[in-house]
Image 1 (cartoon, rainbow, N blue to C red):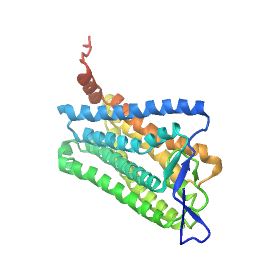
Image 2: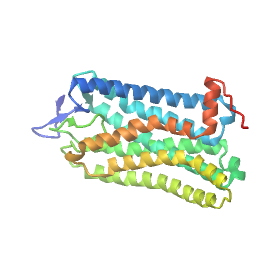
Image 3: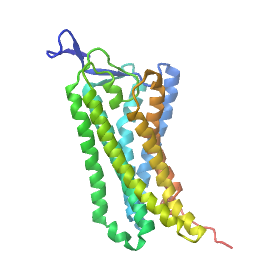
Image 4: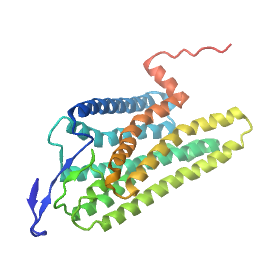
Length: 319
């Protein structure tokens, strides 16, 4: 667990961390293992189904569903970064993670989270074009532009992760190696350092505000124009239809931004450890689970495509 460091006299450098998780009670851990395993399997299955449905249905080959399929893929990656390790710790007494494993987990959490927020921003722009400039939809959201938006989201996620992970290579962990969490997250790891972490916190805050503000601004501006355009629609049915196309996206954005920002911006506090875990569960486990459900239930095309793929759709004729 420990190795000697020539740079720190009379101290040992920790190369392995203990993830306390949720509880040491075997009965509670058995229940949590079953609970989160079901959630993980449903998350993977649900998002895979969304991808398969969109890829197999010709009438879903539209920018909105293109972004949705990539969101589903990101959710699969995001959930897979944290949940398998958490499940493994439920069934082993050695609830440890190596320094390298912890760094890798932090990198992929940051990358997939950043990628997700920019894909959500691209979906907001998609809704803006669909509502405010429907006649130019295919021009403003051509296949080439959609590919660039998704590629840009992944590239920004990579740089966001690199910027925050590289400074971790310069800090040391000398005495504390217990992470009171079920996953290696950057705030939890920095709290254990025996060397100065001010630079790390400044980089985290600046990069988080830059990523969060820019992506949220795109979404906010898109919806200001959307709401303004929808309110000008004379038909109540038309306004309802326009709002329904945006409601699912707003739900997902709200859940992800509020919980994610609260977790990473608030100061570390021993009294809020349990709250940190609950918030982390929301954006890293429940959000990838809810995304395919929310989009499928709130989208008629998706519901019809699901029924078409897995059964026969027989609409009831109106009298």
